[in-house]
Image (tube, rainbow, N blue to C red; front, side, top):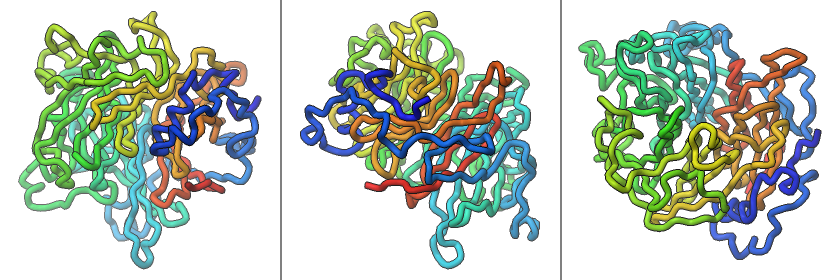
Amino acid sequence: MSESVSTTRRQVLAGAGALGVSIAFAGNLSDLFAGTAAAQDLGHTGYGPLVPDPAGLLDLPKGFRYQVLSREGDPPPRSASLARGDPHRSGEGRVPSNHDGMAAFAGRSAGRHSGRVHLVRNHENRNTAKIPVPTVKGLTYDPAGKGGCTALTLDGGNNVLSERVAIAGTAVNCAGGPTPWGTWLTCQETEDKAGTNGYTKDHGFIFEVHPAAPPPRSASLARGDPHRSGAVPLTAMGRFQHEAIAVDPRRGIVYETEDAFERPFGLFYRFLPDKPLRGLGSLRAGGRLQAMRVPGVPDLSSIRETDACFDGIEWVDVPDPLAAETPIRHQDFGPQGITHAQKLEGCYWGGTCVYFVSSFARSAEGSAADHYGQIWRYDPSARRLTLVIVFGPDTDVQLPGESPDNICLAPSGGLMVCEDGNGAQHVYRVTRRGEVYAMARGRQNTGSPEEPEWGEFAGVTFSPDGRTMYVNCYTPGTTFAVTGPWRRQ
């Protein structure tokens, strides 16, 4: 099986989609790449074919290697901080299940701490989770919730120095995103309220997580001050089935995707903070939540042509962000309605625009049309929405290109995309020139030899120096560090 992907065979990038990638992630390259053929044989592009892993975990191109940083069920790592009896630097129990969204942050750069990296990792645990996130005093929102985040501290060689709980007592922590001030926003992909599924508090919020250490333990925590506990829901940002976020680093606006499981499908939101870009805790000051309306387009799945462009995008105030009685996507947005989309997933800021993913749309489930994945670009300055990539529909599910999920920008430009579809699962790259090729393939078979199944990839991210790609296998929960001859732009 070829590990590179031909756009002619797969129709991964339709029409001008490849050119759209060039424009979107490499600045004003429309003239440079004008006339470049989108359909070409990419069988020899990228880093070469994937080499089968003798250990049966992760296939990579020749010259690349991986380290397993953490696997579900592992005991907490022994470290110097554990020897000192510091529970917040050592891990508080077995590594939880269902590894999902993740981001990497730079650690201290002086002396013996040079090259340290902090990874914050979501655990998309429901109440049926095999291994919950351990509850920790001061870091637990709802003791009945089994989700949350764990944080790993790595040295310059990607050795795990510590692994700990960063937040607990949440539920279905799917994706999220980093902030310009160096924190992680973890998103709950649920709308369950107190009294549902055993929960004692309402869920469906975003929480802010510090990657390096929990918030200071102080007298205010002893007094039960929730604003010092590290488990405070950012209620003004809405209560819905959150997926991912991206922050405009100039304006401080936070964009949010919603992965609703049934009609009406999710919305694309923006949050206008009252105190933007003020650092840790500033989002707790409140703000306005709005939903995107594309005039004349009630469902984004109906748009099929790459480079389809819509000006005059409108933002409508959400009537009840807390969804006290009615889920937001069911609320009344006026006679013109609001724009929905099925399976809104990854969200990322690049250059001057925000990009977001619709993993798929199925008319049989209520969408206006079918597709195997879209990537959209919204330009806030121009109030313009553009469809830059369409995946499928002529898709071989044994090859990459079906149901894109988490995304991030690669150090060499272009996109790294986690696949969440059927058959073999890949991390693949869409280059500035529109080339698409597999960068990794999961080999952990969770099915049987006769009917194999592979867990999706999630949380792809790069170290601050661009030399390591970190990525999760969702199940069995595994966090990898991938190093090799990465090309840099």
